[in-house]
Amino acid sequence: MVVQAYILIQTEVGKAAAVAREIADVKGVTTAEDVTGPYDVIVRAEARSVDELGKLVVAKVQMVDGITRTLTCPVVHL
Image (cartoon, rainbow, N blue to C red; front, side):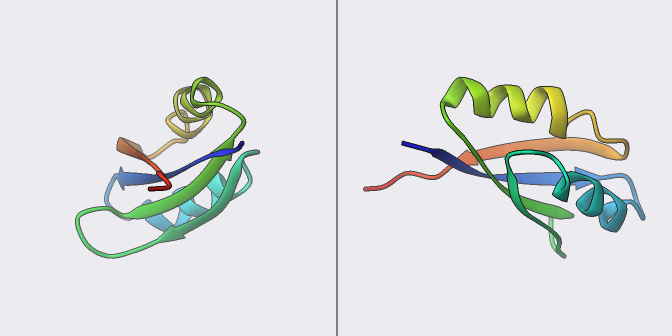
């Protein structure tokens, strides 16, 4: 079963579009869109396990220049 999550991202001022474009190319990211509100970019990602999802966020997503904070929200199926 695939683990899916939304990653809510805050960026430096004026960096949202560039961050969304760069993250869209990361393997495991299915969508990345710049938005308005308390977060600047919302990403949907998937991985084979929670551990792989964590590695994706820490090793790839958070390394993108211009990101100041992330919040990962795993999808649950109730």
